[in-house]
Image (cartoon, rainbow, N blue to C red; front, side, top):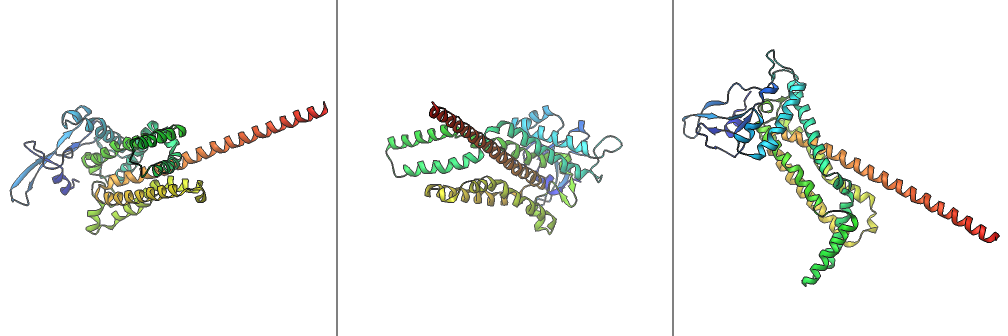
Length: 353
């Protein structure tokens, strides 16, 4: 069940020298959850020299070893916990052998791996959302703020005077304060999800329980691009499913903002800002398309679930915000009608007197 081309690309030699990129030469084997590996080293003929070479993995079977064996806090704080979570779900949903170990040959193993990725991506989304709740609630407001920000920048575009630059910064800060938005909030939101994404790259490539997982004809550790080149067109389904979801998750906030705001009310600077933002989104989508071809299929599946949750999250926050705005509007209208009624009564009483 080992993938030969993967194992050669992800090992260290017996002297402990790193053969390829750091961090991928470790194999996570969580025995407490029923995971196991029949070997952590093997022999292979070097295609360049023709010599028989012995390769070995550095096994990691507990959280402490994730720090000591890898000498990497990132592996300890992100990769191993994420791997433990994934293997826990696989152990929960998959059949076990008579000795209690995970059975990768069972029909439920591949499905269990998919469920594991689904629930793990859901938990990761929940963790990031807990820290970015306010930013997500203001997501559409941020879209509108970028247009106003462009107006301020356009105003001082040709000014090289330091005092003009200072005025520009003051106007921008006043704009952020008025809208109740921190200029660093959107950047923090993006960076918060990055460690989990990088951890997922390592988890799929280094966790034994995922390396041996196959869903139908798709092996989680294989890359779609390489498999498509070899004629395994089933891997193209990952791209076909992933691409519209990723485009939707990236473009949805902008689309909602466009429907909410009438184009006639936009200034020339706002239109330019929206066009610039659209170009940036397209560039990001092209980059993501190239990346998804080269990553492991398990990571691509993780992105599919993550993009789906992002779309649901964006629509939910949009609905909550619109509902709140509608409720406040009705409340103001009621208050206005009430004030009019009181004013009419006072006026009538004054006329009688």
